Length: 92
Image (cartoon, rainbow, N blue to C red):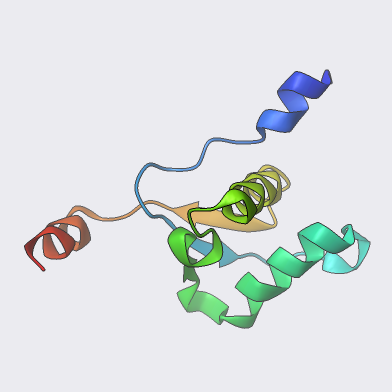
């Protein structure tokens, strides 16, 4: 696969999706991917919001890329925000 396609990874849902770990053998992952996977897996079935893992900075951009790679490998799942959650966030 050419590098420009490999670098894109997989598109994440718009907004602030919840990232949930799947059953996956993380022992074979590189250290950078394993660190992100372990953060998500530690939080269990509740998962973690993308904005928590990826702050709006240069490190957040890199973390978002790592998460797209994990989604592509099916190690984590990105669950889109539901409409009521968006409406509640706007009213606050």
